[in-house]
Image (cartoon, rainbow, N blue to C red; front, side, top):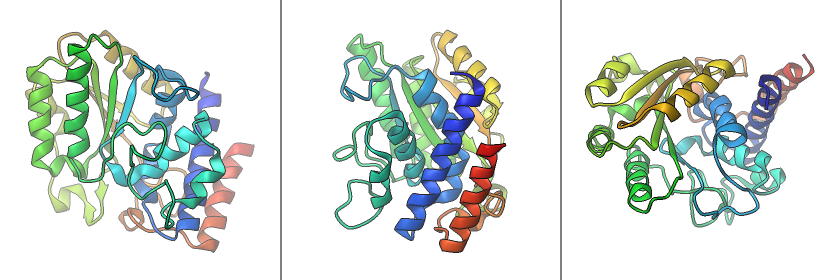
Length: 274
């Protein structure tokens, strides 16, 4: 898939995220929009998966440790063909399979129930180790938020993954610089991210998380690394694609009202026409 096609899919995902959050009246747009490009690349180019057989043996798996960004993963799965896109408009409603955080019991393609920050990363390490023991070729991809790096469990998991030389594990840090209470540097600085992961024995790659050339190159490099896990530190914009949400911590966990939704969709669909 070429870059223009990936950009179109990512834009479609962002539109679906906005629509679903508006219908829900709650949720997390900022961190969902910031990972839409990499999430799109994973589901449409990088991962070995089959929407017709979600339990396919040897498949790659994507774990969303920053589980509050579930709308981004739900949207990518829907557009990839795991279920009808309109199903996502039941997001967060009573009785819906599409809960505010991913639940592996209800939604095809969701590999781990996540939400408590740090736990998804730990589970991903366990999956990578299990795949090695089972001679399973599947690779494990896991998204972390930068604010999530403030959790001690993250560094225990990082140490474990390095100890077991899990070169089938790729972590993606969504480094948008903001969390629910404001800037990372004001709440609890997580810098220098690259140096910390390197000190824990990881192969580190830093990219613009919205540039598909850089995204493609990073995942190709990750496949060549042997004997250590890989972390891709993706420099992103919180709320990417919607002007009034971009770089605004207040949009971490707030759904757009009808007028804001109209404006957001107009901007996103305008990009589609361009």
